[in-house]
Image (tube, rainbow, N blue to C red; front, top):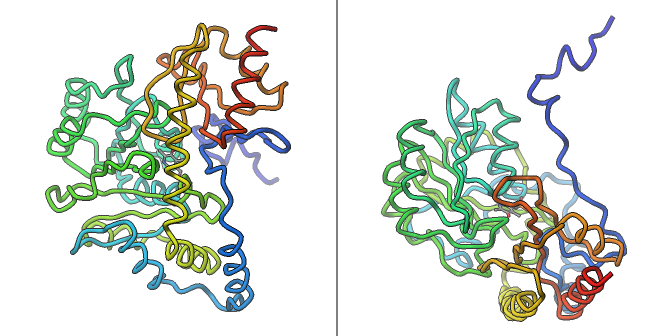
Length: 357
Ligand SMILES: *Cc1c(COP(=O)(O)O)cnc(C)c1O
């Protein structure tokens, strides 16, 4: 008799609920921080030609040499630092947690933040400790330093700007945490295109610092490419955990070509930032809405009966993200991705209709 899942699968895995991705087909999709703009048609035509000639019968370039050289330039990687590529930054988070998951090892994250830090720690059997942010989502220096002292985490994740709150934490406080940390500190800069501030320039100063980037929020969520930057001594160890050919041929070709015309994505990010300001002003003027400042491509806001508002928007064809119930600091909070001017207008109209219904 073969055993049942409950006899084989670890308890903590069976206790998880699967990462739920709602179906946004046919909706105004403002739930996942995607860039709403397509690439220009000439660039798409060039990509089509490159894909036509791609050697799909061969394994990908295992070291992704050409892509790494291109990334080194476009990300402004400091001299002497190395790069490790992942199938999205999610895979890099997985490699980091796997590598550090000695018995008793602690992964420290801030709450609320990107849920993958906690989830992947659970997958891998590492102990995750979440340190609450302040009520305004600022970093609480005393609380973070006390948690580092108490739990001695081998790995600390800090999203900069933070998701789902959208703010940049105080850089001085982060630097204090890096100095106090007994292990690695990973600054996750997924929203860098909309914030510009970065810890990349601090890499040489802190030997226990790594900086993570992704092309997802910049406009290439579909190709799955994450980048970890830091000292070679750390990355060489992590690289042993990387599955061979984790970055496929099409991703390498497309990323190389698009980054060569990186101006396009920078211009789109600038348009999104402009829209962010407009959306923030408009949202602020809606009675009963409290907005939070954002350095990312989304806005967190609080509104009473958030779940009902979320459902009302969905009925009107607009999909955003409800965070109500995910953390006590996020009660009645919703998160909307900045879309095109038309999409944002559709969202605001649906919000007004929902509130007046
Ligand atoms: C969206 C997001 C990511 C996801 O990155 P992928 O490269 O798409 O896997 C990573 N970190 C944060 C904080 C995010 O919000």
